[in-house]
Structures are given as C-alpha cells and as structure tokens.
Image (cartoon, rainbow, N blue to C red):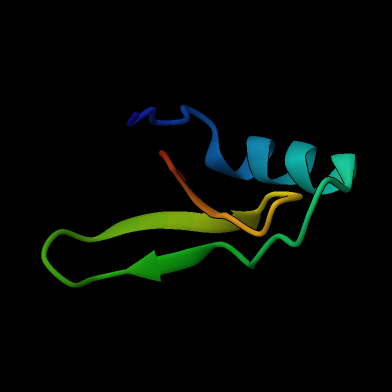
Length: 54
C-alpha cells in the first residue's frame, strides 16, 4: 500500500515523538526519481519507508 504524506517533516517529528521504534533521519534519495523519505522500524522489526513532500 502506497500512501504519500503531505507534510513529511511534520509527520517525521510526530512519529519520532511517539517512540514506537527506530526512526532514521530524513533522507534524500536520487536513483531514478529524486524524493525524500525516512525509515521507521516497527516493533516486529519491519522497515517502513515513509515518503512525502519535504
């Protein structure tokens, strides 16, 4: 399921404050099409990539 966040920086701070798992820094990815994202590790160890407008 793909969902794009409208306020990546705001949601990054919100998710980080919830302390539900490890959160990476906001990353700039430029492989095929440039975008910003951060990674969240859920309690089961799954990595979730969260993308959106920066």
